[in-house]
Length: 392
Ligand SMILES: *[C@@H]1O[C@H](CO)[C@@H](O)[C@H](O)[C@H]1NC(C)=O
Image 1: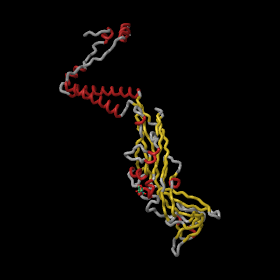
Image 2: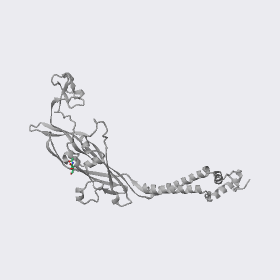
Image 3: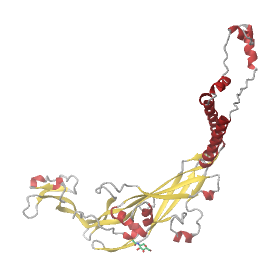
Image 4: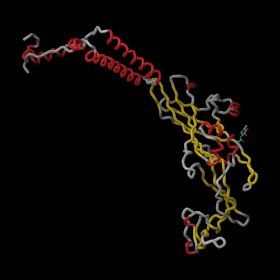
């Protein structure tokens, strides 16, 4: 590059370039442009800022602790157990008051089981036999209840029977329940205490906050009219989850109690309140074989001779899972600037669209196109070097 070239480049450093606009005096396109601007502005103000609150910084990492307490008693009178009163220690498992707990609603009790020999239950393929050699001593029955003793027990003169086993005898009675034992569980209540914290904003709250009034907590029940009472009747929870309590109590199931905190921390802390909703988490439409929820446990005793025996219980019931989630938002300058910036950029989309209409769609497009795009042809390289423009 010659000396003149360097000089030109140096001078152009101090040039300010500004854009030149073409004003199209076209009412239709002008109106379209204003309409587009207006709708983009509305979208930004109403949806992005007012509805989505995108001027806020969001914290979704909710920290939460749940403490539960079930209350209620039930009275039963059955042949297996006699007269019995059931209180919390009997029917809530585990008893610590965690966010997942099980309320027993139905029981099949097999009392006085002792270690001994008895016949394996019918219908277990590996336990069927027709002679002693079918029951190899010391082998356990696959999917059965004990270890084979080597004898085949046949009733009367039937050709097939079941192996004798060493097990907890007598075996559990295999009857399906027809009605729940603890019907009264419908009227039991759960008190759910939930403490939350949003670490980003160092904001803590509990769902029992302002209710210092002890009498209120003693008598209130959660309902659509009483949304800030954290005491729930089991029957209502199951009903709100779309199920019938007595139906569910029979074979068991899992209910989700969801607590959702959706807080706008630009407002007062008292406006930050939980919302509750309920659903059934296990699918009751699966095949009848696998539906419901049950597990077994046993209570062990010794008789006066020191021999151990136990009462086996197959407990059916409803498991409640308290699930907490939420988010909090608070004004912050960075998301505000970012969203205003991207909003302004979106305004450019209106101009782009109107340009398309102006140049390609309307009748006088040729005229506008000529005005907008000025055709310039470079005549000779020398012109540039001379640093000026003159018609060749
Ligand atoms: C629950 O309580 C109500 C009223 O206190 C009573 O009418 C109802 O029979 C009770 N339900 C059960 C299953 O005991």
